[in-house]
Length: 95
Image (cartoon, rainbow, N blue to C red; front, side, top):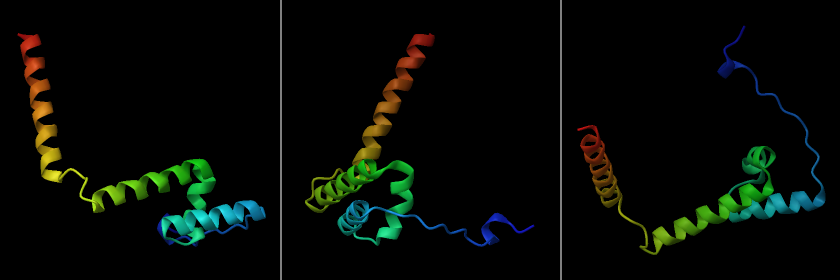
């Protein structure tokens, strides 16, 4: 028996309506990839979810490119401070 990673890939034909083909092509263009790169996600999660995901990802990238993002070091510092405050509150409650 072959290991899973060594087994040949199974392919199946999927018939999409012309409307869904156009929708997949537009979605792939917006995502900057080939339609077949998104097909698994579209079949698994649906067009609406994947379209929203591509839209929100693009919006996030645009914000970062515009300098609106929060630097990683700042996020980690603030997260650490929140965790520390919560830990101190937990210790006080135990006392």
